[in-house]
Length: 129
Image (cartoon, rainbow, N blue to C red; front, side, top):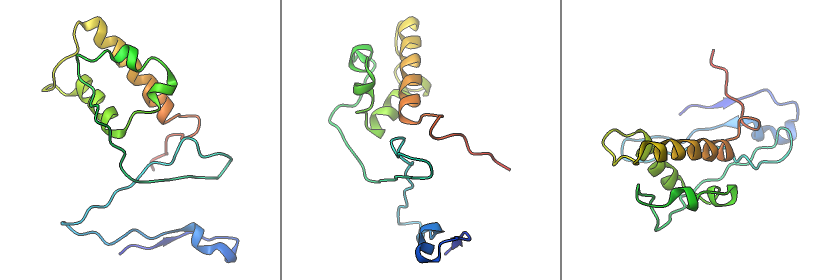
């Protein structure tokens, strides 16, 4: 088990600066979630986990342009739905979105989805040493 702790200036809340990953095992699952882009304030982070499911899995025949035409609609997407859209665009074995002009429109929609779910202004890229 790995334990990481930073030097905190406030000893009263020393555990707030700790990372204690769980034991891992080939027959167990360990999931890491992203920090919510809605976490308010400098230095405040909000992370939540769990799985949200929907009976709708996007297909190439769905009117995605209409179903995802506003930020409010796009922010309701589940992780599985975003992955299905990614697969339609990137997986060479998945059914293709036709015609090519429509494919490009869905690529632009994906860009909006990613910017809204993971805005760079709130979640800047991490520098890798």
